[in-house]
Amino acid sequence: MVKRILVTGGAGFLGSHLCDRLVAMGHDVICLDNLFTSQKSNIAHLLDFKNFEFVRHDITQPIMLEVDEIFNLACPAAPGHYQYNPIKTMKTSVLGAINVLGLAKRVRAKVFHASTSEVYGDPDVHPQPESYRGSVNPIGPRACYDEGKRAAETLFFDYHRQNKVNIRVVRIFNTYGPRMHPFDGRVVSNFIRQAIHGEPITLYGEGTQTRSFCYVDDLLDGFLALMNAPDDLPGPVNIGNPSEFTIRQLAELVIELSGSRSQIIKARPLPMDDPLQRRPDITLARARLGWEPKIALREGLARTISYFQSIDMSQFRAPTPNY
Ligand code: NAD
Ligand code: UDP
Picture: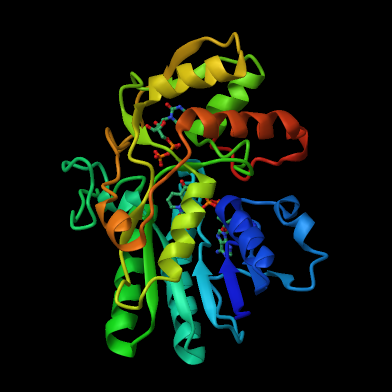
């Protein structure tokens, strides 16, 4: 059945890939974005499709639309982006959630929310299952994002309980791939950009902190599986790749795969509240969605390096000075 689907944050890294999938499936897709951390080139190839339209709008403001489903992805995701204007980040999470939930309630749409592994903060349970309540510093530099996302989850579950809104909440762990912004300051984009240009690879801290990296195609399979799962699964569901790497291992792999002569340097101390370890427990996604990632880091990085080699980076404007 063809559905009318709203994707907030649809011009971003994940949102543009999601729009690609939904348009290819024949759905009527509305991509809403204020282009804070993205650019129209991510969706330029979709603009001529009859079942795709772009709306430039800020999700902190209400919007009236008639849709069957909503994917709520609008929010800066890279630390340098969400810390640039932390009050706006909190507004985007909280007012954005209120606006999409109000819309979903009015038109009885199913609504999906992109939450994050950051709700677990700097975790003292490892790996992190959905039942872990997290260890977030509520007044630190990451709180605008972490607490904003936690408050958004609360709103989703309250609209679900109070107003019977059909919700899906996914907790996304570090995801990478083509269309990441080359100047977003995230570790994968930084290391690949630096390696391609022969610049030093900038480790923060000793590089012993860990992350578990999921390739974008795998993540989207998880998104769609959760959106189409039975209604008794509102989430939250962890979606991520459980293969865990130190940041130094990531740097070495990027150098190897790109054939770079870059040196690894200790560029600065570990930023405040930077989680020391992160790895998803995906037991729930495996059991209820039959989902698990298929693309290994080596393969996904090779594809992402090819993408970064293919773009003209001078065409990209850094959204904030924080990269
Ligand atoms: P991104 O920055 O590429 O995409 C976010 C999009 O939201 C951008 O296009 C941006 O312009 C838009 N946006 C920001 N504020 C907005 C506002 N007020 N109104 C309308 N649009 C707005 O980042 P991404 O990696 O594609 O992340 C997408 C979503 O997934 C975010 O909600 C993020 O928190 C979540 N997430 C991503 C990851 C990851 O590793 N990529 C991990 C956890 C959670
Ligand atoms: N990091 C790094 N060098 C960089 C960028 C990031 O060592 O140039 C580290 C950062 O301190 C963190 C990890 O890489 O420990 C992942 O950072 P990112 O900003 O990609 O995402 P996070 O998972 O922290 O939100």
